[in-house]
Length: 331
Image (tube, rainbow, N blue to C red; front, side, top):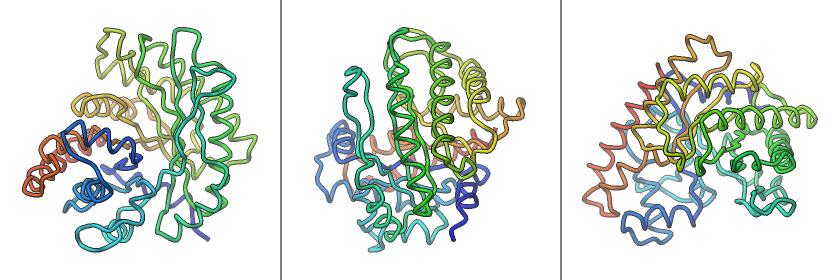
């Protein structure tokens, strides 16, 4: 029997966090073309290798969330990515949801797909070396209209079904109800929606008899909407984010990881540092760390441009950012 609680807790080793390298083919294509890089399956493999094959990542990373395609790819060292990561003490995980679709009852909101053949896929991912999984739900704020409680509830139900299925398969579930940064909402509204979302999720997890002790929560920070014209200070972000989480996340969960969701690398690092400091002062009941994608990758991608000769400089920038984020999480 896998000790799921021990696996979940191992992802919170001091100063270490999780790289989210689980961009879908569509997202990876968009990300790469932003830097003028033509995409193909081979170019996506090189993109993954840039980050997963970098020497020394085990100093800062406890885990990596992979896309299903990457689970079966090999690095430039000719080793399968999950094997190569595990050999360095970095736990391989996988994104298992299949993206979002409009919610029929409220078409401006999204619900996540992927429950249909989940049990079969989990067995396959486990054979390929995955130790944990992730499912993302997307929550939009629009004034007082969105999110609707019916969409929140439907996303929570799917997160709970996913978590139960994953625990049954002997893997650790990361639940990511992401509050989108898009919009004109205030930071206080973001805080209120984080709180309401988490309360809904945990009430439904209880109905599904999901074991909270091996659940990891991946959450947004409480931030003013990107179109609000308001710039939050790291202290404001820390205060409101932690207040929302302390009010709504049970102390039994294995831990909480933060997503960078639209923040620049510097913003995501500064906000994380403030949250970590505030968590110590507030005596937060769970361990906290990062699970960033763009905030860890952007500086490196800008230097790499898809060219082999730029790999050393790109990796140096990536490791420098990892070191900053690791220092931030140590508060």
